[in-house]
Image (cartoon, rainbow over all chains, first blue to last red; front, side, top):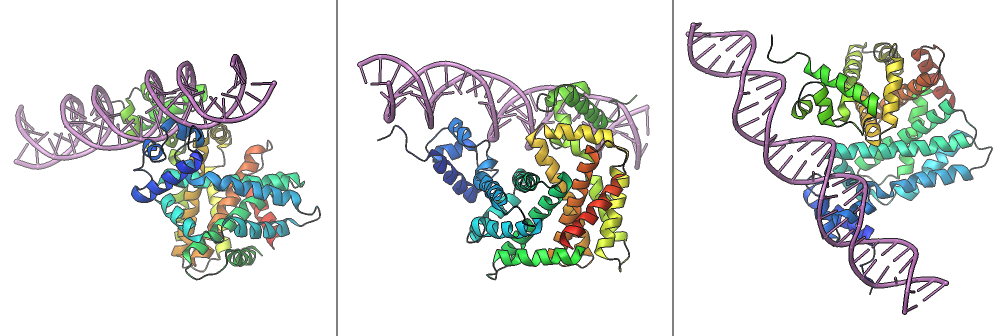
Amino acid sequence: MSRWRPDARQRLQQAALDLFAEQGFAETTVPAIAARAGLTTRTFFRHFADKREVLFADDAEASVLVAQLMAGAPAAAEPLTIIREGLRALAENRFEGRKAALRHRRELVRSDAGLQERDLRKRAALAEAIRDGFLARGLGAARAALLAETSVTLVYVSVAEWLDSDDDRKLDDIVGEMLAALRAEFG
Amino acid sequence: MSRWRPDARQRLQQAALDLFAEQGFAETTVPAIAARAGLTTRTFFRHFADKREVLFADDAEASVLVAQLMAGAPAAAEPLTIIREGLRALAENRFEGRKAALRHRRELVRSDAGLQERDLRKRAALAEAIRDGFLARGLGAARAALLAETSVTLVYVSVAEWLDSDDDRKLDDIVGEMLAALRAEFG
DNA sequence: TAGGTGATGACATCACGTGCCATCACGCGT
DNA sequence: ACGCGTGATGGCACGTGATGTCATCACCTA
């Protein structure tokens, strides 16, 4: 057998999520998380930059996905088409089917100002990925930023609506409605 | 003479800004700020919730201004008209004429991840103020959120462009261009 | 079999942020 | 003039988050 049990990172993440659910984020100390995972505090910080990051560890994948999608789109594709298709893929890959977990995380985030800030940073990182994708496609800085920011607005407003609703509407359908609403406002 | 020199809060803020400029945000400790202001660490935290807040102390006024503007707008006013007028007032009241200071603050924010998160939180707070204003005017939740988020996007993208440019264009003119660009994209 | 590698343990250390109580000028009422 | 409440500050203890540094030791490779 190995010297250490495998999957240290995943064990830490699971322990953290369990403790956050049991007693809240602020009330959970890093030593407590590490102890439940059978590791030390120092090892926790080797796997996660800080305590908040446990909740957003895999959000970076969204930016990677976006970068791939934008790099792979046809050179002649319209920005708006890229956005629509990109949001469709994003909804399907990272939101659809995870409603309960995302609702739970949202409640946790709501409970702590620090988590809200981290959430906003992840949102900003996604916007930067989209903006960089447009920049790489040759768009001007202001236009790329405007499109990117508007895209993440569409995502987040749609996800909020989706998480609030109890029916089983598809997230991507809500995104489509939001896009239509946006065009109605500014058309 | 009073027992204490007056304007403790302002002295703390000035001391903090000076030290941030001299040695950077992360390298400046709260005790050092308090000492320069002739106060104690404990008193610093009585005036500012945390070290970051010193840089954003008066950002809350923007939300107040927005709330007043929206409450005072004619009942029949179109949302888009309210936004356009609101952004004009916001630009005039809280940005125009402060270009150098805002540029300096932007550099500080760029140097520290924690400051970026706080900056995003202030931006989110402004969006909430706008959203609440639209909610109070009877708009639906999704529409209010969409309008509010798009409004702050316009502000921030415009301010970024404004701070980047070396000519003396008015911020509000850039806002107008951004709004036109947005309509062009989604019209 | 010797040595390098990488993940972890263990310890020290620092800064942030908060709770708690003491202090003392000021203004107010008597 | 006296006493008293108020409010801002000082001072101290403490928990927690986060980082630097070195030791340890299974595993892999030459």
